[in-house]
Image (tube, rainbow, N blue to C red; front, top):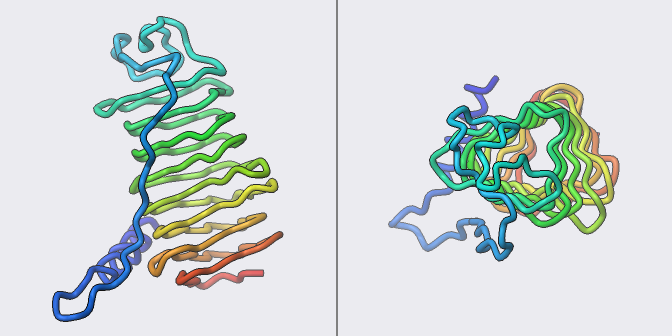
Length: 219
């Protein structure tokens, strides 16, 4: 399944490349704004094991809870905590959450990420990565969004609920198994919703230049 998704994604992105013999075309892009929050906890990897729950991996030598977190490039991080809760996160390295993850304010992840537990968003989470995987439900508060930019995203038999919205900007969203979205926006000419089995839109769906494909049903 992942190989076929990559092939579809490569086809879509290649087809969106401008032709020198043709007039300039619109190319959707995303910009991650400069982080303006002074982090309370900075990853320093002194524990040398890549584990979020190891206090030695943080500059404060304390595992962060409910504070602003920064992880620079060049690492690979895994959280095995039952719940990882932060005020905000700015992560530039690949990261995996094996338990639940919650964030209160605007945040960004600009590397591959896997969520194996529930995700709760009190603020907008912007993700710009090649591979993004959700293996449990996503809860999005009103006024917040899950913003997926230029990413290959898998929602595996989960629901994305709440008053917020999932925004796919120039991204391929693969809905594998039975998946539901409360609110979904597809933005940009290569944004695609690939429906594997059965996908439901419980609230609103906005499509601006996007594509819906797959052998499943969309209701």
